[in-house]
Length: 152
Image (cartoon, rainbow, N blue to C red; front, side):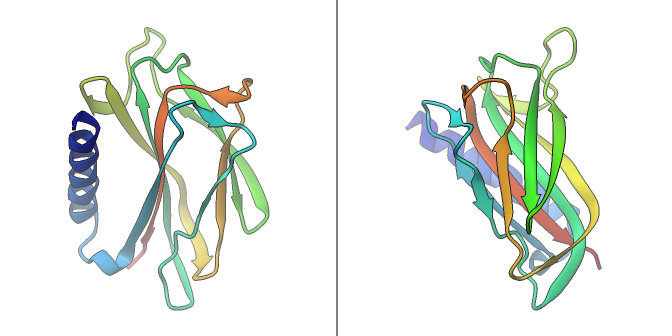
């Protein structure tokens, strides 16, 4: 029951953010993946197809992470593979005093960050995400999301 309520609230928050950021839903596409409660394994990349465009679209690619307050690190290193072109990002989740940058309810926090401000994706573009932290299995990550907002 508690997890279902969190999931519903999380979905409503993302929907509200999407409505506030864009004037039409056809310019926004996003997807979230639940992470195994045992942890996010290094050898388990997440695959996304974020572009819901006819042929090609240019826009912003956003990364979201939902984690518990027991997440043991202040950042999250990820590798992003877009159509076999790789890039790495350091997502800062907490300040030097351990205060989470993300917003949350209870013990869950969510942070969104822009990976690319102007990137072109086709309807067939594939995006893979994996963590590249110094542990094989990353604990306390609950969900990972990727969103694409097409420019006007």
